Image 1 (spheres, rainbow, N blue to C red):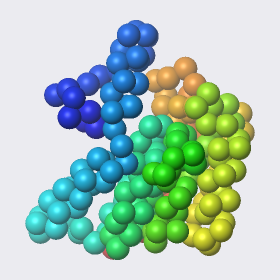
Image 2: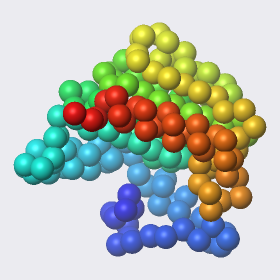
Image 3: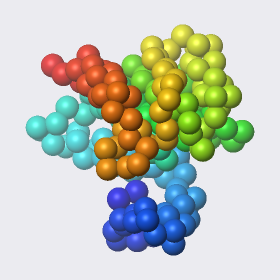
Length: 182
């Protein structure tokens, strides 16, 4: 629950505009720094667990958590071996804490997928992120998904795009296999 600071639990009801508005309000209360503190706590918890390998961490974010995944990878490059942002928003914006400003701090392998039809991310935004990765020669695979809409991965949503979703799973599982398996 990313919103634990404000509410004990949260489920968005997409058919209810008030629920979506409440979600956007909660989202606006979060920052990359706050999520990085949460990630530090999780990594420290994993370090104390003998069943976990806290030296190989992967982060994956969809939509609003896409920038958090990249930010965490930049904050903890010594342990984050893979990071994926799927139809992530606010990845390359005019803000001091925009993830594109930190791509040089990422040491793990990166996967970014962006949808052609996305009300939250346009092509210029995506191109700005790609240029940031290219400038630092990071091990990043960025893919613009033609014909797909924001949320293309989720079969329960109207914007589901089967071929794009399957491509996403293929790339994501490949990334995780290469970076996190023994």
